[in-house]
Image (cartoon, rainbow, N blue to C red; front, side):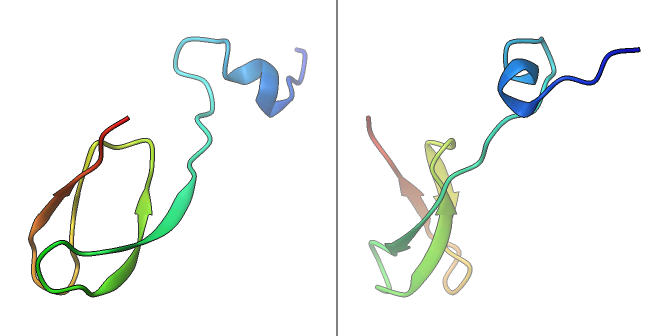
Length: 55
């Protein structure tokens, strides 16, 4: 058995995925929360509005 580092695991199907959280403000209620930038849509925890991220 060989132990792989996280960087190598990303190359393997089903491997480790790095999640980057960024503080964003909701488009509706302006509440600030942390969103996973690997997702294109995130629901605001305060008002449940779906916020979309492009690019």
